[in-house]
Length: 370
Image (cartoon, rainbow, N blue to C red):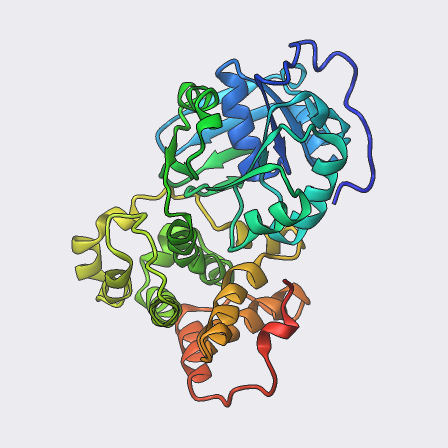
């Protein structure tokens, strides 16, 4: 991931990082820059580690942080310790991993090379199994699963903007007690939850909308205001819920509705949906999914770690996931430069057609990354 190492200008760490009091954001893209920036604004010692393009952007403009509740903060470039060289991890006591799922193993290897083994590592990534991947790469380290429920995008005017609500979650561990107050001070409190498989699958159910939004080409509020897009999402969620039930997994309720009820509400006519589930539309009008942002930037998406996780779940219980397989194919087509934005009606027809397609020979999961 961070193959071209370079070091930020001298003096950026004059804040005096203290190993037991300092936080690193490893993979400082949209989510990482927002979380790290809010911590810096609250006076927490933070170092950001990420790609050169983000380092250059911050060097030019600093960080402009905003959210749907009216927060507007500007951090000057000199106040933001940003590096592409992971050797700075040696000075921190807590690492928040926010890289894309495809980069998890590489991130773990770099952490193992440069950080102290006493450092706490928290995965704040989409998908299922990232904490397990980090634990496999970092045996003996304290690695915890975490979850970020809100959406963050980089806007055209240079802001890092949080467009939806929700509290971050993390697995319980007594060694977190000294760190949790830092996040509360930044307005980003962690909720401690001991049922993290349930939490991650509850989050993945919400993330199923990432691909729908990416294919729609419109903001989340516009997409969710159109019944055909909602019915497409309902197909994906209903299929996943059946598979979770077959696997004996009870996904956590992360929104105002229990997961089993959401597909039914999504299918409602527009007027009734707005009356019954208006809170689902309380989203910043600028907000879009991270998968849409990836496609716009020509980056590989996390489709194999979100919808692909559903396909692997299906195979683990001897079933198929044709609707999720179909949307994977649609996203891959766009990634390859052969797709375009889809109307809600076209997307719904495409996903429904998958229910009538024959199951492909051989395990689908074998063609998806681990």
